[in-house]
Length: 390
Image 1 (cartoon, one colour):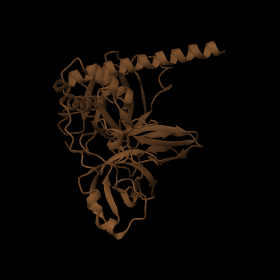
Image 2 (image 1 turned 180 degrees about the horizontal axis):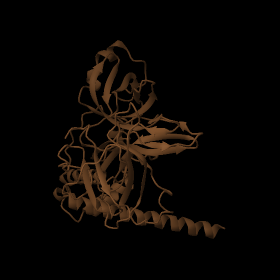
Image 3 (image 1 turned 30 degrees about the vertical axis):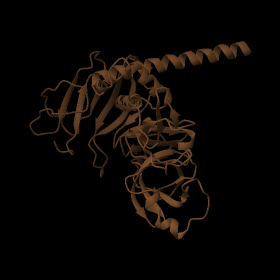
Image 4 (image 1 turned 90 degrees about the vertical axis):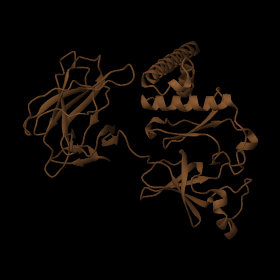
């Protein structure tokens, strides 16, 4: 089905069963073969382009919490080629049925061409454009309001980068006095020769001999951990590995997830109790390996990692990587606590069964429940401590 033909889901918001019909703009009036929401495929009449239809599309999430999205389809603004236009989209828990609660404390989802705000006094931010004294969305994402500034944050996007972020990347090219690094961004990151530590952690000015030996330090295909040093106006990112905790990575497994799932923490280097070590790159690249000793960690990765990894450690690495993948598949935030909880919950199943979608969903549900109860206990303990101090 061509991408220019919009597909619309029609349903009754007041219907408790949330039955959904699929309507496409094909001439035959039949429903498409593959759609991204859970629905009953039926044949329905074709609607006129000028007719406005209010829809409620129910998309069952992988976890226990159900969400309902309410979208009003309409005609796009003149000169704008979009698949669909929404006046407003609200997302709430399916259990919230009252009209007064709908729209409060909600994430506002929008689609290209949707009118976000028609009131005066608001400033346009990224992902918005003005039309007929109103702000409209340029992309599909979440509406973010900061005081009077309104912007749209895309649901799925490339890594943009912030100064100080820990990233994991792969060397793709060696140039004059610099390496090009794939960091899952719109452009390759730049790692300058002056921004790396020489073998042994020696600090001195880089010479012509160092430039000739660049491929001896890092070559195409090598994985490195680094930190974002600077952002440029054209969107390029400058990296550095001046700390000995950064550098070339040895034996391990690289797991790729969406960047927004990796939560920002004080530290992104973790030695898990299971025997595996993870580097949570903010760019969505996660490195899983064995524990490194203090001597190995202080080499910057320049010494060849040829040590035999025991079978138990390899199994822990494989299980940890599977847990990260199933958490990402269920849109669970990734940090040390969720990974440890998922690992403990996955011990009831063999590691080779964790790739099964049903088992992965069960492990993710247990992880969310365990993390939620743990957060609740911590908040209760903090409240009791505060009351006692008072």
